[in-house]
Length: 153
Image (cartoon, rainbow, N blue to C red; front, side):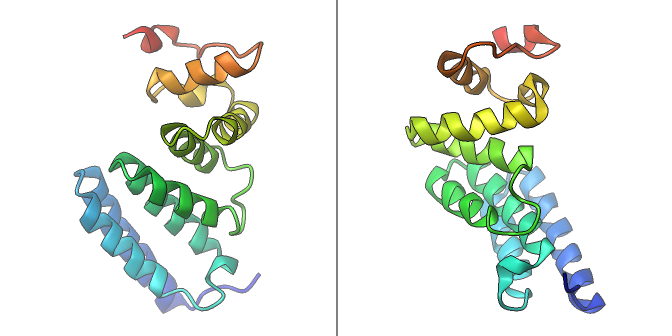
């Protein structure tokens, strides 16, 4: 796989770090604007770069956390065409969560099962318990995380 020029890679990292700060402060529109500026630096075809995976992951995460589930679904679906995306539990988690919020139940179950199969129940520990409960309603044998008390708040 080709590598980005050092200057481009460094600028993408700088922009994504700035976007992460905005996202952590729940300033999702600002974060998205910065992530998209990083995306614009990728040479075509953009989805062939490893950086595309983590940029779109950040975009999709910000979409989800900001409540824009349609954009989250679309951007995370696009991320699945980038290097090392298929099988990434975080990407499947966010995509499954967006699908569930959009009431696309079959797609949500598929994505959330990928998360469970790839990372077990523990990956759901810091998430709203409804996502794991939904998955448990769709498949037998789904266990609760090691800290099940977090799901009964």
